Length: 212
Image (tube, rainbow, N blue to C red; front, side, top):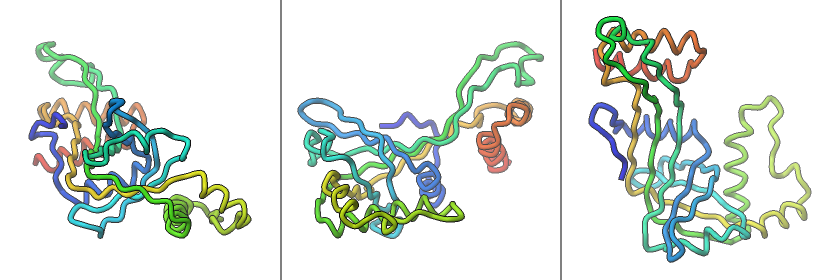
């Protein structure tokens, strides 16, 4: 369960999905008889599958994770976003009364659901091609799975196992100074700008707009 005060909670489905798309890499957590298992894997979002979407990925067969988790229990995929240390020196309140402390701003999305694994070669290749195309699309000369020799690709596919996570719940949290007053938040925006942290600065500005 994510500690998520109302001021920080994000519930808009498209905002949560866009966070997942931008993050790309997820921390995948499952539970089993050996305790929690954790892997860091890139995941592809199929937003149209199910109520909350579907996550598609793969891991090495040599990774014991896929054989250790209890498939009757929900898995958790954590997608991290921008984060930043916030110094109290940026707050107008520091000059007024000094009752301020440092904090850390961050954005995160938790996706929960049941995992299913698959080893079918054609299905695996399709999954790998889709994930590759998603991230190669930003390059002027994108690489494609078909650029590699078929025999080599076949060997690589034999070394991985695919999985799907049907999302049954999505939790989003943007802790971006919503609990500060307008003057303090303006100071955070200016401070982040000077620090060159455009991503977090943008999130704070969006939160300020919604508050207005």
